[in-house]
Length: 333
View 1 (cartoon, one colour):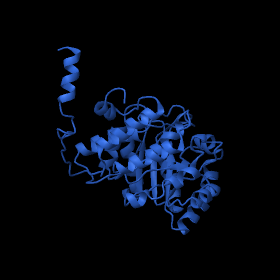
View 2 (cartoon, rainbow, N blue to C red):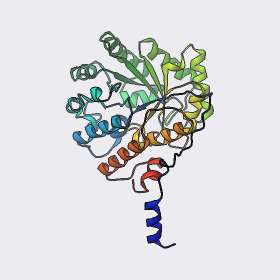
View 3 (cartoon, rainbow, N blue to C red):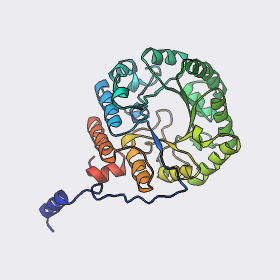
């Protein structure tokens, strides 16, 4: 077959989604529905070397909402000196006004590091916020410029004030499975820090595999440890990076433990500016493909989501990391 014939055949054959693929096979031991916590606009774009225009960020978030995602982390109110890529948070938030009315149930949480960040977020109408802690001492000092205990003390009034104002708080806990300076992280250490965030009032705790070294056995063991400590699985979320290709396997392990909230980033955007061994987040499209194949409801239109990530890749001037996007849109997407 000639190259021209190949192109013609590809143009006339239906796409895999039109064919009804992936073919869902329901596993009754898994959750019937999973809520995806989309972190691309915040955790994804904060790691970009070039500054993304605020109007592009606003359109990115609007496209993600239109694709069916109902939790989209919009930005961060960290001091611009530390994360210049998100220095336009005050300008971005008014551009998102009205999205929640257009897409009922849409949640647009933002990250805040301290009380000053909380003040800025509340002034711009934030209705959900998140704080970002570390399970290890070294990363706490590198990321927050203070000890893990000092960071917890800083978060306590943030959580208390936000909760009193009717604003739910999510707690992120990073380095839950491995630390690039300290090595393996004991599960008891992770659970101890996680319990502190929950006890101070965080409504949800996201367990982060910041450098992507976790394996399914570790995931199951840590979640079992939280359950034994009295934490219900509906208070937990998981946040995996795909450094070693384990993100989907780790997600499946978490689902088997009863977790129903999974963090992901459209197109696999992201990493961590304070841990250079952290590569991209679990790609939302790859996650949706797996979940839909398992017969798990996400509310997400995969074709629309892939098109959004393809569009964002063009704004950034480089291909994305999602294998599903590349399969659906072509290798340059």
